[in-house]
Image (cartoon, rainbow, N blue to C red; front, side, top):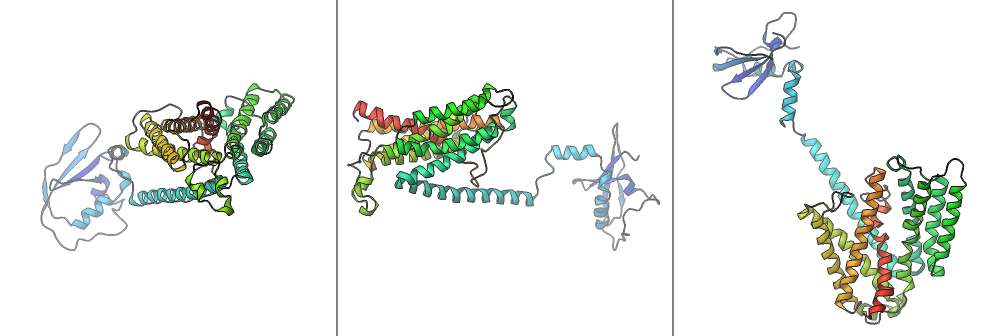
Length: 409
């Protein structure tokens, strides 16, 4: 009898679980620490006792007894540990146990806090980057060099993470730090010399020699990951310096430049490089924003296994938003002159944005992490914010430097 679970059915309503020990008058075990004394009688209630065991169910003939509602409540709540564990598991499986209101509220509060941080820091970063782009010169270059250094540190930390080191030997830590410093100097050398091919080649040779001469057994994985780090974190971002600071021809048809204050450089400050950089940055932001909103609204078809949350529907919406932004800004800045060139420029910006995003997602997936770092609250690491810009600078510079003069548009 001790293994049976019992239920009380009151007027054909919900079953109240009871334990047999609480119903029996066993003198060795009290029902509760306090004695329950009925104060008054209630109307007659019909009680059906159903003993549910592992083999059979015994139904007791209904009987009419006088019972107190408070006594029933106390008995129903007494000794919850005597309820069969399997019944509790079934209730959980059936969704009988729901999250508490307190947990739901705390989760909602956490999400709102994260969203608030994301918006605040996003606006701060956007204003700072916009000011650096408008200033150009050393301001833009030093800001880019700082971002490159932080991004390189994050990259080499990802290379040393468990997910990647499980299949390869990471480069020594001193090599990673030296490479981060080399990457940070590349934008500065680009501004000063204009071309850093010899500098990059020399740096790669020195790093490769250090890896080959290290103690122990040098591995090709160390060499390949280090060379890619120099290319990915150092060489590719230098194209933004070439685009913003290297293309110094004035954009004569720009209306904004005509009314630009003389103390801030006047119309000569608005160069082709500045206009192209502003359009490119704005197009990338539009591509990311529209792709996110489109994926949330109508996204169903996964784009690639590298990033399962990205969808073809979101990518198409992002492409449309990127091209539209490029066309609208080309009309405002009167550059490029033709509609075809503005559409092509928007398409290249979108392609470079997606390619850079997927490349960084592949690195993080191999590393087994969600974010490249935690430098920016609500956003993750620096690579999480600049991954869409890494390859786009080279495409934008090639478009302005080669394709536009080639076709005369």
